[in-house]
Structure formats: structure tokens, C-alpha cells
Length: 544
Image (cartoon, rainbow, N blue to C red; front, side, top):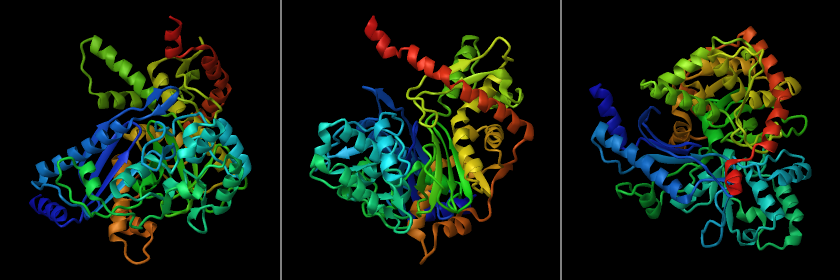
């Protein structure tokens, strides 16, 4: 143990470390890794998006408080464990939720509150741009938000000097450089797979579309520069060092890797950047990323086309909702146990309930639920109404209740994945899972295998998540040798043959999920009726 401790201390004092900080939907996490790519210290900050004036957003104050708190916790752990005051690291990387809209004027001021990926307010832009580009432009994408603002004739548009994602914003403020990693950039605007840059023909198409508006900018001028994994994307400025570390100990001049989106860091954290590999991230939202061998035969509104951090084509099936409703029910059960005088550890409660779900009927006993806290583009649902439905004949018990919520958490994902697997005949050699749904060993993995009808593996390191993934990308930037590819670096220097623990799909579970998904599709009219007839709380208060 002493030798290991001394080795880690030597890595820290010699700057053979890498720091990754990721802004997730509910948590900001900082992870410091050593020269063996193992996490040696971490810190975090819990936060939640807010629905303000019909827009899902986070405040700038929360962004910076979360960044600084997570860094301070990580640095404090370094001091406590290794008796070293952190002053330098080998490289830094920032990642965050993809897509969304952060627009700034020439003075660097945010023109409108941050519009996150969770918003479903760009339907007209989505339809018009998808038709114009012959390329799927989902509502979440930054270009859809920009064009919708143009359609809405929002005054701020003429003042835009730069627009970017959350990761791009953090990186810009800490380095002065307006750049993005290819993966994150591909969620702003389509990427040309040959040039590994924005599609210039589509940029010209967009400029032609809005020419009559006579804005003082062209699209290419306000987009961040797109950079592949491995490139140095700037260095920590004096101002940036003070923003990140309020104690003043961290030194400027540290190199940064290109900022990435959570989809890209999920691929890296699961070693799923090679063709015919895929990963599923299941937390607040759920998305599957499948690295494709070829382009799809046609445009599917259910399938996003993005890239890996190194620029390979990825078919992405994204659902806005996954675990939020499950978390709400577990919270209710915890309140019930507390009323009875029992204090139950939350992790143990999740473990018990997830494992109970495995005892349920294969098709969930005729139960139905929708964990829609927000709208879902794939199913055409524009707002969120969490919903649980059963008939008098349903087999209503705890096992089926938990099972149906796990099934429904993956329902929208299943609809999109069926297109890739059944209509495009995409071949997948391995799928790796990560995120909160897989925290209970075996349970979420078994349900996911049934939904995907494919083996699903989970690595021990998957729990480290995207913060570890962006730390690996930072390490790749610092340690890349010659023309070494990201795939080679991960295979040979990080994972070294670690394929994780695999769960094969159970035939009966697969059949049960097929029965459930038909019920899920047929019941979407019930979800729509809830939106039509259940007034949200703020509107109800206005009637009082």
C-alpha cells in the first residue's frame, strides 16, 4: 500500500495526472486520474435544472458554484489522502450535456438564459431544417434552437457573436478559446465525415435560408471551432485558474483537451469508439450510441447522426426521460419507511427494489407507465406527465410495479433501436452500459439486454462515468504518441482487454418486452390525454 501511495504522490507532484470535470443533468463531478488512468480523487456537486417561463435551464451562478465546489472537494481529497496541495495537473478536460443553446454578444454576455437539451420548443425548426438539409436535426440541437429563435423573431439574434454548448462555454471562459470536440460539435451542426469539420455545404444552405434577415454574422463565424480528440485545445489562463480554483493554488498554463459532450465521454468511458461497438448511458436521460460502418439508407427522425470524439459516424437514439420517475417512486417508498420509523439506506432501497423487479411477470403483468417528466420527440409527446396505468385485470404487485417502471424507462429507446437493428440491419459486436440504471449489479443490465435483445456488458469502471471519460481524453491529449488513434490508446493503454461482465438476453424476457412495447405504443394516446386535460401546477395556481 505504501508503494502505491508513493507512486500516486509522485504522479501528482510530477503532473502525470489528468483532471476531468463533467456537468451531468443532476451532478457535476470532478475526477483526477493517475498515470495508470485510475481515479485517485474526486469531488461532486448536486444540481437540478429548473423550468422557468417554459424553458428548462440552469443559472450561470449554479454553473460556476458547481464547478468550483466539485474542484474544491477533489483537491481537498488529494490533500487528505496524499498530503499534497494540488498546484498542477498534466492535462484538463471539460464535458457536459450535449446540445442546447448558449448565445453571447461581443462583450461575452449571455443573451438569453441557457436553453438545455431537455427543451421541446423547436418543433418547427426541427421539421424545416431536417427537410432542407435532408439530415435529421433534432429539437435538442443547437442549430435548431438558433433557427427557432430566428423564426420567433427574437431580438437577441442580431447581437450574437458566438454560440456554443455548456462544455464549450466553460472551456472558453477558462482558456479564452472558442472550440469544441468533434463529438460535441456534431450535436450543434452536422459534421462532414471526410473533412472532420462542419459540413460547409449545409452551412451555406443555412446562410442562404436566412439571408433576407440581414444579420451581421454568417453561421461559420459564430460556431466554435471543431477539434478532434488528441488535439491541444488551449491552456488554462490566469483568469481561468482563479475561476476553477478559488483557493488560488492551481497554476495557469495547463493544457486542455477539446471539450466534449456527455455522449462522447460515455463512449470513451466504455471503450466504445470503434466501429460495430455501442454503449447505452442510462440516467436522467437514456441514449444509445452505435458506431456505424456506413451511413443510413435514409433520414430517420428517431435517429441522430453524430460522431465519436475522433470523428467516426455514430447512430444515436436519445430519449429525454429515463430514471427520474423511478427516483420519485423510490423517494416515496423511503418516506413511507420513515413514517413507520425505519431509516433505510437509499442505495439499499434501490438494490432491493430493482432486484424485486426481476421476480415480476415477463410482460409486467399488464401494467403500464410513462416516466415522462418532459416531452419525447421519438414518440411525438411534447410535454411531460409522469403516468401509471393499470386495468382491474392487471397483476398489481410490487415486483410488477418496479418492473414496469424499469421497462418504461427504456420504452422510447427501444422504439428507436428497433429501427437501427430491424430496418437498417446494423451489426453490433458489443454493447456496454453505464449510468445510474446499472448501479444495482445485474438488474438494470438484465432489463437492458431484454430491451436491446443483445448482450450487454458493464465494466467496473463504468460507475466513474463521463468525468472519467473526459479525464481519459485529457490524458490522451497529454500522452498521445505520433499518429496513435484514440481507439488504439484506449484498447492498449487504458482497458487492456477488459471487456466487462456480460449479461446475455433471456429469451422469455425479450418476449415479455415485445409484449410490453406494443402496450406502450398503444397507450401513448393516454399520455397525450393527460397532457391535454391535466393542467400543470403553475397554471392551476393562476386560477386560484
